Image (cartoon, rainbow, N blue to C red):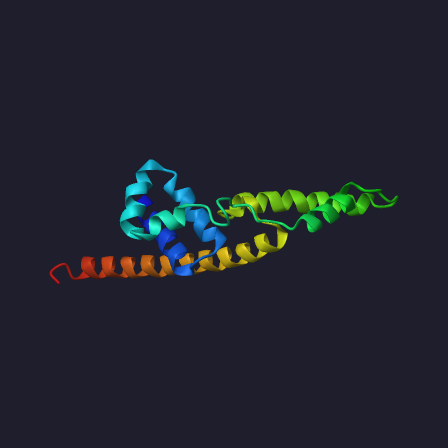
Length: 153
């Protein structure tokens, strides 16, 4: 069962192409010693490229210094009165984004917009994987019923 799940995850990641979550998923899968030889066999020459972090040796996105300065100035500058609700809402959004970063493979170093884009893509691929698995299960059960009804065929 584990081999089927591993094969499905790798097939989904390879079929989707070069997205950050695909690199993250394959890198996460390759951390387990049991999976390394299987992944090397399936991926071949692509194994090294897909298991190494993208974007200059880091999963983190390079950011412009002026954007960082502006965000720090806005964040740590003077706080206006009456912003308690806004700050509480931002805090909740930030906590939910942190949870989402842990759920999406490779999501730890993504900013908000990239995280949402990668999450949408990842969810669509997971839905396709579930749809395919359900059809495979249905086909397997149908063939099993046929073999029970007609054992000699």
